[in-house]
Length: 99
Ligand code: SF4
Ligand code: SF4
Image (tube, rainbow, N blue to C red; front, side, top):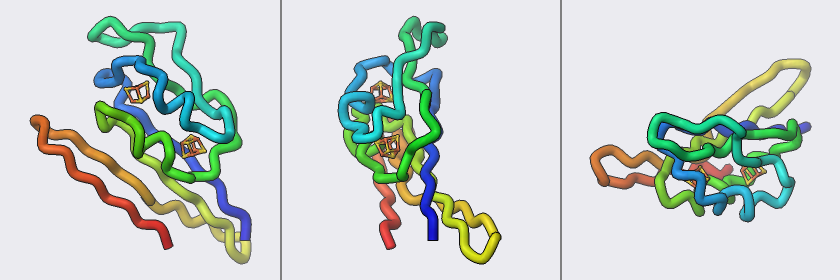
């Protein structure tokens, strides 16, 4: 069974601290050339080699990353959310589903 990961960034909230970039063992991430509404270069996925390890989401101080894993079983693609760290009005909640 092949496992492939993907990450989603809330780019308007990212402050470009680069912690996620340093934490990624796959070198999948980089800062964008563009800036967001609050004036920062934001993190983006630049390589299609993410494993869904969740390291980036766990180190992000602004809780803007959601990690997905996609498994391919008998020709069917199944994508599931494995880590979402949300920060709503400074009330940070962490959800990890690491089966
Ligand atoms: S989930 Fe892991 S491999 Fe994927 S971008 Fe984040 S740190 Fe890199
Ligand atoms: S760790 Fe979070 S705030 Fe820092 S660059 Fe990555 S996504 Fe942006």
